[in-house]
Length: 70
Image (tube, rainbow, N blue to C red; front, top):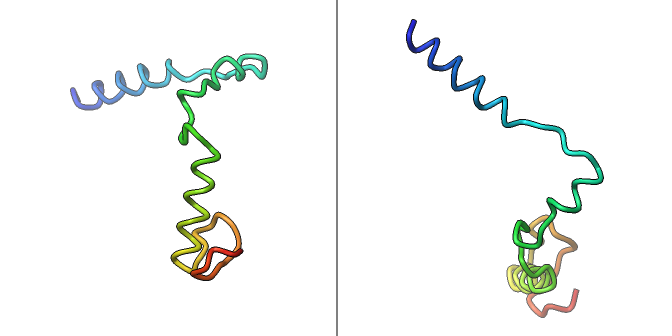
């Protein structure tokens, strides 16, 4: 029974952190530090090089050979 109350308490505390973000607030929350890739151009270059060398596309674009001339 104590475990049930403990889980209930954790669920209530977790759900109180959820909130809806207004469209006008999204710009302030989209900071460059929060991006998965800090430099999108370098990330694209590395992805292009990787799938050119592997002769396969990892879901990022078209297929290619080993020459890198996609």
